[in-house]
Figure 1 (cartoon, rainbow over the protein chains, first blue to last red):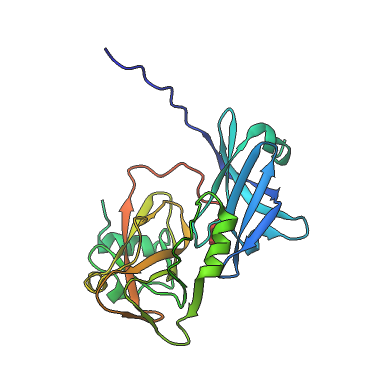
Figure 2 (tube, chains in turn cyan, orange):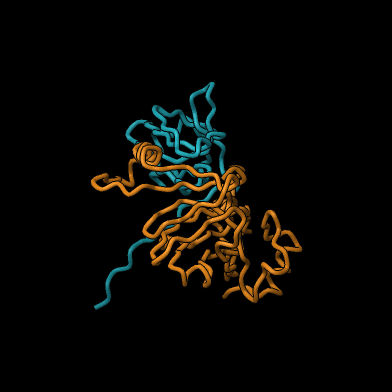
Length: 102
Length: 176
């Protein structure tokens, strides 16, 4: 008896990625100064990420990142890489929709 | 399959593979490129009882700041004592095109002194750009002197069967 195959579905990857600036609530500086961690809460989506300080728009209290792909339910967001690694966050589409271009 | 020195030079000279500052001829081996140690390192003090939750990045930053001692090797070499753990990075910035991936590995001469340069995370993804972070541990019997610019690791470049399609390369890559 063969096992049923899972319906694997590839995300749709954006080419090019879509530039975003997502608001963050809290941040914490790292030991090297040029990097920090931020916490983003959009609706039910909670994501924390390591980012370079240069990615933060202090005037708008938002962090620059890029939507890199999506599935039916989710949008994947890549944050600029740091020495502690790169972060990819998953946001519910309904939560992040307002920040994506129409 | 790892690239040979002939293929490495071909990728470098066409600019598809970028290593900055570029390696001198003696740093390119038969199938690897030697990378050098950056002057900024972070020595993490042993902290019994401190538990890190990897999902809480703000907390990680706080702990790294509280339990880490930044050192500047440009001021002087650092005696890396046995048992110590250090976060470091390569002097070189590396940019991989979508058809190449890489692994960073230790150098045999340092490995024989008990020095490891990564903790099970040697993979460099296709499309990556930035300096490479090293998680260094001295598990040998002696201290090892760390100096800015010393050969610390080697990069093995591998060719992908097909270029990666995942959107890894964005404008922010250059900031890492």
